[in-house]
Length: 425
Image (tube, rainbow, N blue to C red; front, side, top):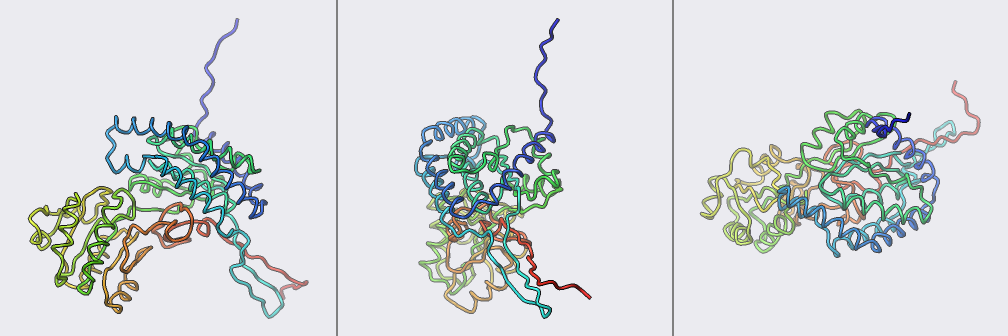
């Protein structure tokens, strides 16, 4: 007599251990590939993405339909949406990463001790990186490209909102990479959306070398609370723009509009506008934003500028809207602006608009954020705009890497010591 048994379901911890094992083996092969070989593999991956456009866009259409049915916000749907132009941009970003200088093997510094020992600090890959992200299918390609170029293997776990898009992008990437000699397991996508698999990744100390979360505050908080693996955190982007009394009115209007309304759903979008009480063109600035379809929530002095501004609650100053909503406050000078930013900034990106160079320099020195800008839109907070190719995210902590994390942020270093027979007395 025979009995048909359903196949056993792999436990999350066993699944992560298995994927990590083959990923670490692939990383050892990848670490031995030279810079031209890795670049050629990434160019092949970019070409494969372009060749798979119809398949990827069809998969994205599935995700968009499901997202609309689930009632995802407009900002989340915007982050999820792919079209020919956006997919071309994703492929172009992979090509751009391929053409960047390879950080692996770079000598950070070198010295010779009095006893003749030669000491060097040399950049090396981190190892196997786990990346947990939500809703943005471009992260699948960006993360894969940056990790391969920097000699790291990667285990990707995307959000359920983009599951079909991620799988289609991953399949095309791997096809291109393997055709150029990169082991298939160098870039793996978690095959399940089971949340328990995330927990297994976070506790896989000794198997995964670093975790990078990309998503909302609740995801990052869970990762930081539960991880037993080092975390490179990307927190929310409560980005401020301060229009100083000495701001050029035309620059102030253009920067404020762009910082908020170019794309409201990205982490570099301005969420709070601070206006100096003596800036002469404040009404025009807020009118531009209101006329552009942005809801403004302000303090009493801000509401006096335009009757269309709604009252702000205490929670508004600490909210990342990722939507066409903006908090506005009128402040008395640079000191008040700095104090507001210190209380409410998430240390992501903060900007000042001013023609006073000494004020600009004080703002740059005193604002403790990963990115601090003068006379520029916060929407430039992006690895591509910084000349880094793609990015893993904007790190808002103070250790290892800060700001847009690209190739250098995905390396660590080792000390290499060369002697001629020295012994320590």
